[in-house]
Image (tube, rainbow, N blue to C red; front, side, top):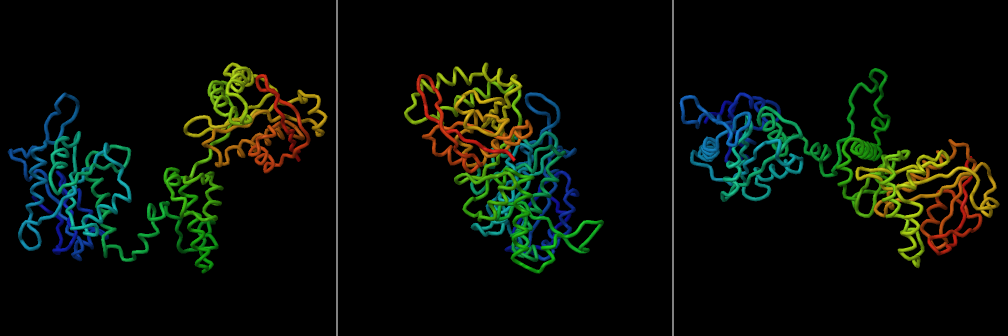
Length: 464
């Protein structure tokens, strides 16, 4: 086995072995912080040529795949000898170095490599999590390494096998991935990074956010200025700006990270920033608010399903399930929604997230159908907010308010001077919601559900 880029070692130095058929590919490990850590004895990094343990004169390391198919597969016997040989390489005292092994195989089919995994590996090789282990990276090529290599070593005492992917794409081999892993791990080792504070504030750190934008001199460049707060000298204001910027950047670029935030660590300002970025804290989760759009003819069936799930929830507690279902069947079926969507006097808006439709509203233009309501609603022209529903899991996310605001905008665009609606007198939650949205109670009316007559409040919102 060869090590074209070996540096000095120390008995306590974290040990990393990289096995490859292209040792020269790993030359960048001589540079920057990794190279300096090797030269300073903070890291024992060894690069091995897989072909050194091949047994034929052609130094063959691969063969055709069983079952057929394109490409070649790297042989398990060659890899077995290579991995075993890394443990036979002499340690600093000249004898075999006995350490547990983390065998890491870069592969597109592996677990996504994350900052958390980098911290785990750094802890393993530095001894922060127990007796120090060796990290062995197996750089596959062609169609990959025979699956029995991972299977065999996963059953070996003192060996942990991890197959990781650095992204959803395919490279020619594992060397580029190995460079990524080594750099990510080594910079976390004690003494490698000069200012440990830089490790705390970076992307994917303890806060779980992407890093905020950074700036340096000159303060103005091609008409672009550094934010004034960063030049203010006010450390508290700078910290708050950076936190806000990190939240917004993460919300824009990595919704998955935002939705994984620990809500117990979010203060009132954090929640306001997330609210402005389209997220809401619901219980112990951060949820992305859905988008609002006009319903299409193809939404009729989904709207019927949504109505069937939400209408009964707005009925009084003593309403029978049969009465609610009868109302839905008569007024909220897929066929009825198809007709509503064709009606020029009706406007249907839907809230949609990655799972599909999660809420909807329906506006009905024209004079109120009830003469009594017509007397109560003074400002003309008026429009009825006939429906406003959201799935229970969306309650508290601001979905209903988004739908209301969009509906009010649509009513204004249609020339209406007021919007009216009816809400059951027993539905205190809905009344409170509409009051916050600017609706005032102007009277009462009756509403029939099945064979029951329900008492509704009539609410009106004037449109400036």
